Image (cartoon, rainbow, N blue to C red; front, side):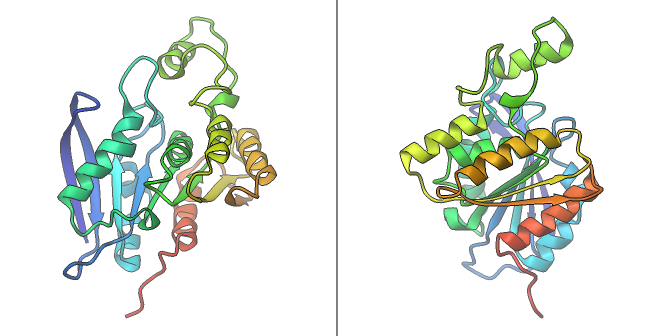
Length: 257
């Protein structure tokens, strides 16, 4: 398989940023590969998926493309004070990648977005706003940032939260997942499939349950699947397992020789 490291200049961000593309070894002429866009966690970067999971082997065995963007600690949103990372990952980067790699399909039915922790929140945020580009999402250990307790006390945590989202209640803003989901229902946007997973020992399990309960209450509008694994926390062992489950869910099965 090919692991291609790129540094692209983003017009949205106004600086160069890293992205990794993983492709299978053999690609037929005029073939259009399904693509999984993988979002990293808050304290990591795009390379984490390469070092902590079986992604590279899965790309070869299941014959798909993977794109791993780096967005620093932005949560993949247009920051209140900072870069327009949502616009970059959901609009600009797909256009760049599709133009650079003709073997990657532009069809929404063959483009899926997935992520863990902050990236899990980010991938849900992306697909709820851009269902015209992505048809399936795999969100691991993914709560809604609107449900996080916020105290404007001058601490580094509160300063970072204001930098990302502002200082008010996020439930009625586009940073809130359930708010975006309500808008999704109102607009009757293209149907999406959601795979959501969390470990039973995850310290933010309650936030995952809030998101789970919302989608289960609105099951007439969303094709939603939830998986909770016992004895796993906020950890790579769990995310590696769930990545494979999501690939199965997305129909990216192992190719037979």
